[in-house]
Length: 273
Image (cartoon, rainbow, N blue to C red; front, side, top):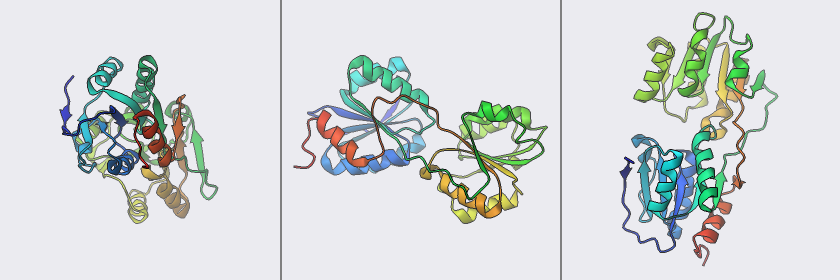
């Protein structure tokens, strides 16, 4: 198992918390638990995500991807006593694997889920359960379409390049740009930006490309969903949202205090003493 580590000198008498990270929520969690001396190892998938976390005496950053088999080994090696899953709402594979490993090894698991934005009636918006469901329709036909869905789903739209004018906004990473190119997106149809993106910039981009339809994920405020809804309403551009995958989480919260209570209970800490 190859990965990069920031080794902590802290001795973890109560075992470690495994925080599945890479999101704004996971950053907030590390900041909240740092003053409480919670021994925590955060897993992220890219080196660029490492710099998102402030150094702390009890914090270790692990960089890499974990299969189900590797998760069990990881839990044993790192002396994990509890798991908080703050991964992206659409990163279902790591959640499924973590839940399975937690159940197998009898380790407490808590999902920290970003709140879902309430449906807006101010713009012409529609929800689909999946990309497959959307692509069985003709919504994209002859439209100038902006995809703000990340790089992974782009290949599903490849067959639509001769039926619509597709643009995609992706992260400025080599893997994202390679995937976009393989999905048929030429450089003039791509913009690489790292969120957050302001309403003014979002507005300018949609106007620049004369966008007639926007497709996004229900990724909540951290994913800029609220900004996209605002701009869609201002410009009268239809916004199609792909719903979050359904995952049967054993425990779930969007309350940071619940995470702290979870750590106190399962790592035998007196966080409020």
